[in-house]
Length: 508
Image 1 (cartoon, one colour):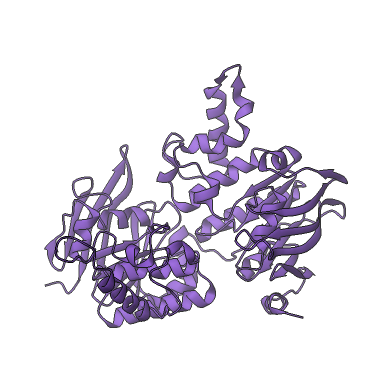
Image 2: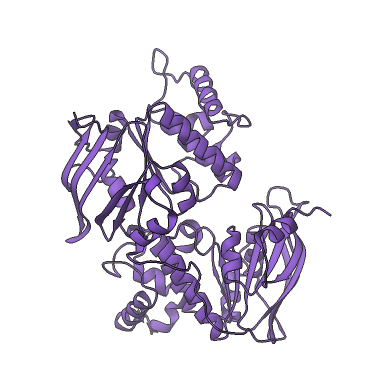
């Protein structure tokens, strides 16, 4: 016996003849947590889809041994029966069903005659959630009643209910708060102690460093290195991922924003969709200079996303705002009017609000400016393809073809496609809501560099980010929000994370 719970040997997976994985090896012991690291498009999610039989045996080459025996699963159900359970980046919960129904979906406990034993399932559901320190969840209520952090932990409970021996977590903390991330990491430590093996995929390398025993780095579908975490640090992981030393996380560009006020938001108010008497944004006003990068910081629930959504006419509830551009009051009551006035928004949730899943990469990129290619009743496909090719090259978007489905791209490359779509509108004010969420270190650097280049050309940028280091790394000025109110407006000179956090927590 090799001593490994899992061995993947020489895995090759091709899409349209183009190899996405080119001879990857991976070994995991029981109770071990492997950090699977690589840039967007490196092949991490593809490798895990091979392992979990999203891509069934026969659609790839190589060998998988689980507990010393060949694993040739033809479906996710078969891989789960063997003990391999994947928690995808996009949660696989049914919002309308109860927490219990989601936990037991496809694995229901039944009474004689086939009726579901809700009493037994509710009892088991409560026990599972208790294991995960979730004490404030009513298991009979719809899962839609709970936020993203709770839903992520409910997804983990669902995996535990399937008796997972190997748990794959693909970007599990992308929608979690700092305190929820600590709960998640403690859960994984508990699972390791019970002998459950984990494969942890995350662009948050501080989490990888905290929880993983071994680091496996892949780049462009090839295995680069397998190294014990105690012989690595975050800088070395980054160097292996991007293939070069990264001496700085944030680019520098000598520039000075103009003193000219380009954009003003006055008296922005957003009313809660669920409780219309409550204000999620409470009378916020601010100004933006030409070529300035304005960071907006704050804790979860501070009202940052609601604020920028209202400015772009995309807030789902009732809102009020006066928006001025170059001294002229403009109508931004709908996204189309906002775009025509000179605004563009890259939304926080790219999967729900950024991409159109049924369209290919190129169609997603040109969606906002399709009229440019219209000739009578037809689209000039040649002209459209020329622009798409230029955009793919400009943003370094990794795709084998512009005709591939947008969903075949990694999260970071989908983000670049959304960014490209909005930049084609040639905005005067670009709003970026969590622009680097789920994006690797190398791609983050490229996005920051693009922001600085745009700002130096006179484009004014508003960036919402939950990462204070990121806000300080690229912003000229920082607004801090808390409980819907503006708590601070700081010039980014010798500004610290402590100052921003203190302002966010200030209840005076």
